[in-house]
Length: 224
Ligand SMILES: [Mg+2]
Image 1 (cartoon, rainbow, N blue to C red):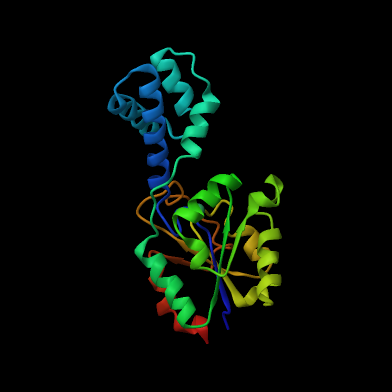
Image 2 (cartoon, helix red, strand yellow; image 1 turned 120 degrees about the vertical axis):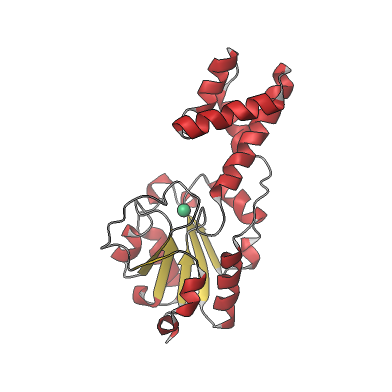
């Protein structure tokens, strides 16, 4: 019987691109004001780079394009520490409610810089909606997924066996490896948007693939 469902956060419960694009907007606003540029032009250039090259070197490239002596770390901070306007996916709200109604405990295990992840958690109001949240970065960088520590903490917290829990995530490169090691059931969610949606999974780590979190509710056998 399943007693707890633990979720990844980014791209599992909300669209991470909303956070990313909001960060680009915050950087564009800061940068354009400081150097008296058109905010819209800066934002468009950032998006161009993003779609061409991904996220890795955007801020270095934008500084180069305008040939300015800006400190890259300031831009990174503007990106990370704006007030995010993000919302849970509808199916995320539904599944969390459904868990509560069905007496299934809920948790989140999320990687990423602690202060940034907590700012997303606050914006999404997740503390009011789930029973236990672990930001792996609070343990230290070496405990990010796929490390097993966070999964083990969940087992201890809920006083359950690994087999009585499900981990739901979107990134086959790291979400399911540690979960499987401690006996969790694993579900991969594939959504319309996200960096990892096209990644080939190692199917040994993934028990089920779903396209909406609502599918978990349909799997009656999970709660029996
Ligand atoms: Mg994710």
